[in-house]
Length: 592
Image 1 (cartoon, rainbow, N blue to C red):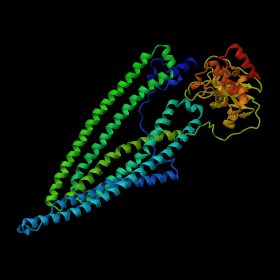
Image 2 (image 1 turned 90 degrees about the vertical axis):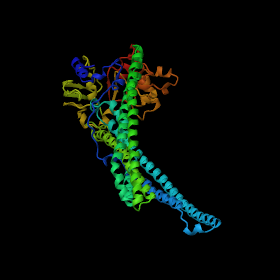
Image 3 (image 1 turned 45 degrees about the vertical axis):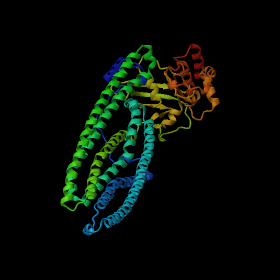
Image 4 (image 1 turned 90 degrees about the horizontal axis):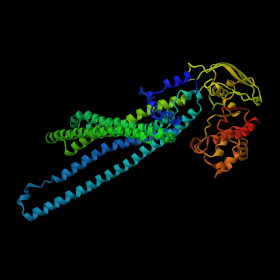
């Protein structure tokens, strides 16, 4: 806890919406009710979205695009086959016979008609077989092209997303602690899950579907103008209305879907907050209240879902009304052209369906364009974090690495304030000198800067003014990773990871042996209680060490610090949860 002014500054700076029941559940749930104001979406350029694609990815995307274009062009081209086949049917129905057939006897007439009918039907069967081959070939080609376009784009997107996740997580891990003070950790978790999923959706098969729709549009109109430009121009007058209605339908559904997901997300946030602090909820008897709060958010989702269903069905009705209206106009004018011009019924069908398919493809491309726009917006936030260069880079190899460190520590006129609260001075000209082998205790009121001093020694932050030196070397000149390897830290509230006790102790030094882990546990007075557990050192401590008591967690944390044989040992009330006997044993080990 800080001073009274710090507490006021902290409380006044928080969102009023966070003041909900059981406000003090704990740090796990503090981000659940966070509500950010909608901001204008920043986007990266269309090509920048693919910045993590390598040569193989570009080849996959190129081949996938080629197959998508072929897939999109296949449907209008199939209309040509359909029109020709229709004309073949009509030609077979219009069988004419010589006029003098009526002068012959009935037997000869019947024989002649049967002969000509069998001849025409034989030719029709041969033509239909040929068209069946055409359809089969187009179908096989579409199957192959569709599989390649979707699989190649999906594969390329998956490969890129893997690199983006790796780069993003690495970028977050290398940021200085001050960066986390001004960036919400829960927001980072959302970024790595939701935003990267949006990128994956936007640069995957949706791109292939967009190219497919564009190819269908252009091919449809090319076929239409080639086969019959008069009818094409008439149908073209209604095409914008059809395309607009289809796009509007998709937009309405996507808007309500977004609102519905937001409502469910609010309900999920309530559940996450309550489950993270379920012990506190049960202790205060708040089960009914939290259930009602969760159900209220579900009611909002239900209301939006009903609105979505009504709007979607009305939009669908309007769209189909326009579709059937265009059918009526096209067939009416097509009939006129058949009677007064050189149009055939097959040509009318070819033009009509080619233009219709091309027009609908415009609306089908809208969701793909929206997904790509969302991917560009999500990529802006993700890439901004990846490109952010930390002031204190723990992954850098730069900096001096002394061969030997004694541990003489000195603060020289140090001034410091936290990045999140730059107007509040924490340290005001601190001067402190600690010699090798010396034990120094920092004592003072809450918020006076004790923990801040410990964090400055670890170089979580750099002082605003003044210098901090070890053996006369400025901390800024030392390699950050090397500096932290020679420092052991035990905090007042130690954090354990959801793994075994041995792995938690091994976190102090990667190359530690099992014998050294047991030795450190004995020095921390943790060995006895560990050996009483069913799985001993292989016991899983639970999430954040929930299966361990406060004293057990502290002793494991002390063992973790001791196992690395640090030159400098920093303790922030490290034995506050221990009894007197355990504290004396641990203190003797620390002194040693």
